[in-house]
Image 1 (cartoon, rainbow, N blue to C red):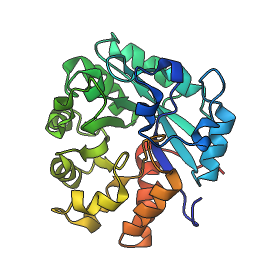
Image 2 (image 1 turned 90 degrees about the horizontal axis):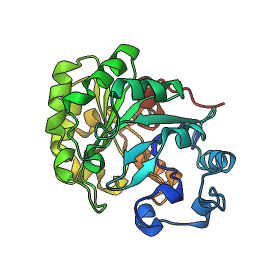
Image 3 (image 1 turned 135 degrees about the horizontal axis):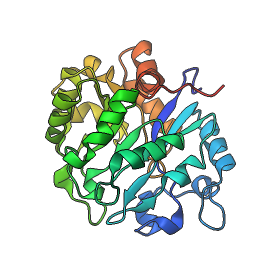
Image 4 (image 1 turned 180 degrees about the horizontal axis):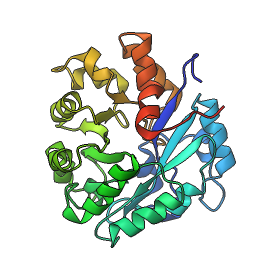
Length: 282
């Protein structure tokens, strides 16, 4: 709980240091701190107990950590590494890259068996469009099981990123072909696609804006052409930890932008509970 409200952060990257493609300073985006370093063991792996304590201290009731298979850009953050951090508070999202995984449905099933609660695909880092037909069997599996698809939607400044694959227009095929699939737009169209991401979220009940990597102070500017009261009710809180000032700092700033307490509770936890099926830890 944070200030009397449940808090769910659906976007964290507790990466194994040795598996990162880039140097540590680039990864944390100049937000390194003793608090972040404290969750790491001497061998560069994350200690699950210390990570859980950090989340608790930030008021986080449930969190989703993200696997990623993007050797071209960020490296490998495996499903096994993320599953090792799972517990009552911490959950993880699977990851697929059609250049690495085949058949994708078998790999998704394997990661779901490890406990994944969603699938995250990263077209910009992985070098593929989200509507790549090789991924369709995985999307069909998600739809059948009622699990969400999280899509990196927006630009990335990391070396090697292919930002043309961050365009939300590529999601239009999925909305037509998988009409019951919940789609979470991670980073909400960051860069130059805010309007397109907002339009998709407002036009389709299954599309959600996820706030990771977006400074709260700029959100109303980014989405100025849209109804703020309507759009906030389609938002899901996420941070992009560790590359942020702090989880609680961001959460309080986002809550302050909401038009009423009900909306704040939806953004900080309620929408994530609905879409990811998460139950906050007691």
